[in-house]
Amino acid sequence: MAELVKSKSEQAYDILQRRIMDGTYGPGFRLVIDQLGREHGISSVPWRESLRRLEAEGWVDIVPNVGALVKTFDTDAWKRTIRLLARLEGLATALSAERLTVDDLARARELNAAMRESLEAYDTARFGSLNRQFHELLCSRCDDERLMGMVHQEWLRMDIIRRSAFWYAPGRAVASIAEHETMIEMIEAGNDPDLIETEARAHEVRTLKAVLEHEAAQTTRNAADRT
Image (cartoon, rainbow, N blue to C red; front, side):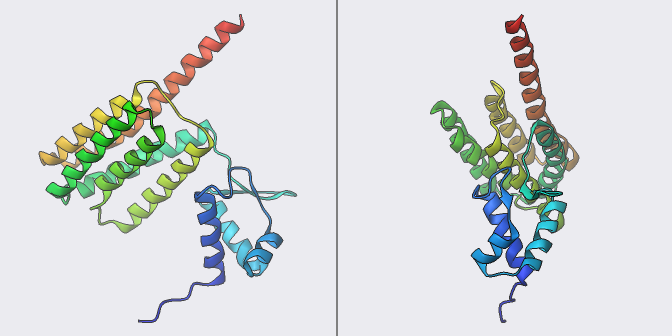
């Protein structure tokens, strides 16, 4: 079967999305259509179409009299993203759970152990990568393609947010590893999918709560230091 040729608009979209994801176009970067056209040999109309699509998906802000800017994420954006991801990933994990194999769960434990090692080595970048792999694995047997498309979009958004700011709460990483083991045990025991969904969702929400509480405590300490 002949390979389908992507339209110019799809090609432009792929270029922009890939460069936003890999950090080439970082938060606040101005996307100039004429410059993009000269660089890639694609006319202005496909770039405009792809920018409107990226704006609708939440990756780009189109500002009057300024143009298209790669979205800058803040604390509020992170809150919204993790709340949505908690629901989407919780459902995807529940739908995947009964199809996960013994080998899948063994691999999940290996990833969790490697996360613990990365913490002991103070390797936060490796910890983040392993954490992503762990969650991808628990969702990997979900057969709802539309749901998984939305989950992947939010994972990508979280990757960008974490690059634009460091979200941290003391002790949360250690607690996260323990919660991973709880999820593995629930899946292994064949727990009701609703219970697995609730635990997977709560896992993400606990991270949100820990970071917000840490931020609030820091704000209080800073205010006290100024008085």
